[in-house]
Amino acid sequence: MNFIDLSVLVNEQTPAYPGDPKIKIETIGEFAKDSYNDHKVCFGIHSSGTHIDAPNHMVDGGKTLDQIPLENFVGRGKLVEVKDKKFDLAVVKEAGIEEGNIALFHTGLSEIYHKPEYYSDRPAMSEEIANYLVEKKIKMIGLDMCSPDKEPFPVHRILLGAGILIIENMTNLNKLTGKEFTVYALPIKLALDGAPARVIAEVQ
Image (cartoon, rainbow, N blue to C red; front, side):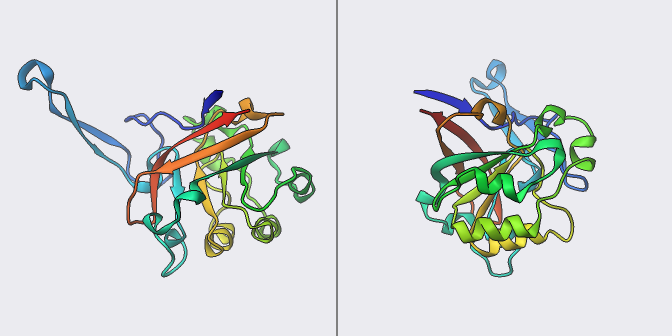
């Protein structure tokens, strides 16, 4: 078995979505004087690196992450290439996405994750593609971007409204090209609108 880590490192240099709080890490226990190490970490859920959006994030009364069945966090993955910063419905349809899949969109933007352009120079998925994914009854989507869309976030509302979760700020999607794989996207069990997650792919 071959496992690929699709999660970014979380530290005080981890970028935050514009307007969101930066991650802060405070030492509250040092081995030299306390005989143990301990830390306090403070972050916004949606500025915590690789994380999963629950329906409650954009749907009034929507489910929080703790209310999502465990099987929704694991599924057969399908990789969709986003060329030239353009989401293409025809390419999405050619990816062979099936019910219960987790569709990952590789844009290449993870290569500029620590640059301002990561947020300012990103494509937006169309509502047509979002509706197609709803029709296919997939479990979730994932992207190597900070968001699948821009304000007023119509794609978020379409997907989350249908119970399709969204993984944001992924990395290493280029390593999945041409491969069969299973995605494990396990968030912290928070009764909230999202949570940081460790996301990995098991390549067959």
